Amino acid sequence: MRSCQTDAVSPFSSPSVPRARAQGARVPRALGVALAVIALAAACASDDAGSAGTTAAVGQVELTPDTGGLTEFENPEPSDVAVTIDGRDFTFAEVSEINPDYAFGSARATFELDFFVRQQLIGGLLDEYDRREFTPADEELRAQLQVAGIMGEDAAENDQLTDEIRLAFTLAGVEPMNVDQARARYDADPAAFSLTCTSHILHDTEADALETMDLLDAGGEFGQLAAERSTGPSAPRGGDLGCNPPGTMVAEFAAAEDSAEIGAFVGPVQTSFGFHVLVVTERQLTPFEESVADIQQQQLQADFEPAVTALFAELADHTVEIDPRAGVWSATAFQVLPPGTPAEDPFATLPTPTSVGG
Image (tube, rainbow, N blue to C red; front, side):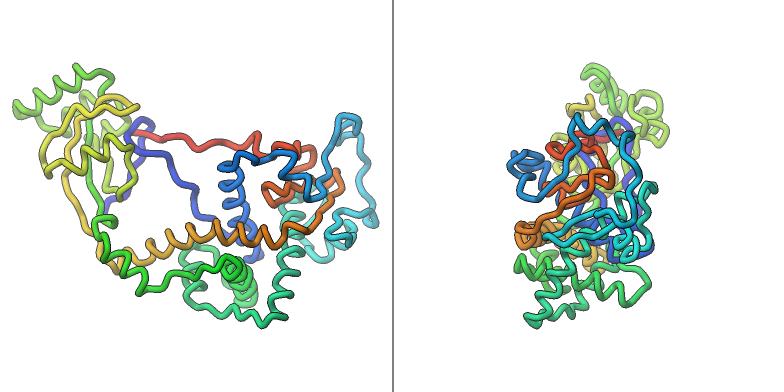
C-alpha cells in the first residue's frame, strides 16, 4: 500500500500535530510532552492565551528590564531556592538530587526543571487519588499508549505513566476506546477508513489545464504529461500523490476526488495551489483489522484535550515560583519556559503550521 508523498506545492491540507513521543531516558516524561502539546493547542485556540489575566494566578517570575539581563546574574549556589511549589521551597541541590538529570546551565536544564515541577504537581494529585482508592489498572489504555510509542521498556515507569494519564482521563470522565467501540465506529462509516489513490498535473493557469485536458482526450499518457507539464514537485513521479485517507486534501480537490470515476480525467480543479487535472487510479477499503489501532489512536488524541483541561482545573489553585535564572513558569502553557521568556506571551515565537504541498 503506497503511503502519502507530500510535495512542496500540492492539494494536501495542513498537517496535524504529530503524536507525542517519549523523550529522554525516563518514560514518564512522555506525559509531560503530551500535556505540553495539548496545552499549546488549547492555548493557541483561546482568545485569552498568554494574557496577563490567564497567567497571573500562578506565581510567575518574569524578568523585567531592570534586572540587567541574565548575563548580570551570578550562578546560583546549591542552597539557593530554585522553585517554590505551593509554598514549599526546593533548592537547586534538592532539584538535582530528586532529578539527577538536572544541571543548571546545561542544554537540557529547562526541560529537566519542567519535568521536576510537573512531577511534583501531578505526583501530589496522584497521591490524593490513591487515598480515594483510585485504581489505574487499564490494560486497554496501556496497549494504546504502547501503540502511540509513549511506553518504554521499564515496567515500573510504564505503571507510573499509565497512572498519570489514567488519572487525567478519570478526571475528565472519559474512557479509552475498546475494540468493540472501534468496530461500531468503523461499521457506521467504512468509507471514512478508505484510501483514495490519485495523480494530478498542476498548472499555473486555467488555460494550461484545459490544454492538458485536450491532450489527454487525444490519447496522451497521463504520467508523461505530468512529467512534462506539471509545475508541482510530483512531476517526476508522473504526478503520483499516493493513496490517502479522507481529510488529507484541501476541500476543492477532495470534492473532485470523491465524485470522480476511477480512471476518468477530471479538471480543471482550482485550489489555492493552482489548477489541477487529476485522475483517481484506485480506491481501497482498509479492513477493520488494519484500522482498529488508528481509530483508537484518533480517539485517544481527541480525549487528551478534555483530560488535560480537567487535570489543569485540579491544579489551578497551585502556585509555582521559579528563580529567574532557572526559567519562567507559564500557567498558560503549564510548563517551565527558558529564562528570559516573556511570561505574558509564551507562544510568541512558536511556529504556526502551514499548508504543505505537490
